Image (tube, one colour):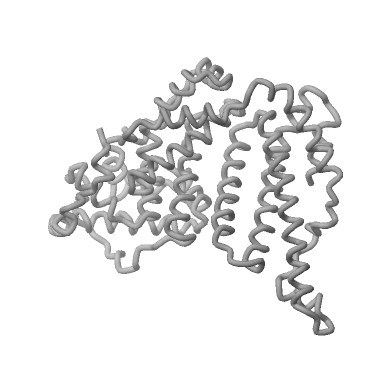
Length: 203
Length: 203
């Protein structure tokens, strides 16, 4: 229930206490959102350290400004947007202003049954990690966080068609990566570091 | 959500969204809260700020009113570096003049930037904002962060000048967002001058 886990309503009383700067209330808000925030950052960035720093910065950003929150829209939506912005900014910083893109040769259509339906979580996480950062981010934002293509285009500074093509190609690439022979090969290649950032901190 | 018609549940990739959502949440390890609590505590303002801020704000607004805005020439498009050279050296004049002109403009931009930052910090501390404004502010702040990263890599005045122009323009956008909230807050308490004065003075 990853996607739903962000949609947590914070009681008004807790928000009121947090606005007054009560440490216990601030911690209560942090505890409510640390996992969805970290999961989102981790899926976008594919690196545990970067995800931790992103969540730290986003939470600090949010908690310092919480007294300005009026409550006319969901609190979780505000926090999630801050996490997404921070993660995208980190991707730009770490990988340059332009993002790497998938090559066009991934467009081969397939009618085979979707392999993710039978893949276990570890395999799917490993395949996800092997996607280019922006493709993985777009895929996650669209499928899990349910952002629209227009919203993703605005956030990434790309076009709507770019977002659509990343979702399509990302799905095709993921399918290819989850084919048994590809996965076995990649596991051999990455034997030493089998997706530590995606599997090590999950519970 | 109009572009979500091709959502995974209705196409051959149907179960990808469900498979991604079913992945386990991740937890930041070690716990981020102790660091966050320390950071928040160190940034928390002392109670005297409740009394000092109105005075600081008034001083800031006065300063902004007195700032010679003409020196920035921001109402007109800024000439490109080669145009500056052409204008300042009609009689084969020197690159020195052009360099001086750039340095002057940079000095003005630094000054304008500092003034805006102080004003924004003072207003942000006092005015509650709705979540839409907060999201917009966060996005602009992220863009400013990106410009700062690029400024860090700027080698000389030619590189830095357009970035500083961009930074000041973004700060002005941020001031507008913050200023509108301040204007509303000021109107709630004192329905006339404060808001208009604050916005006009900064713009």
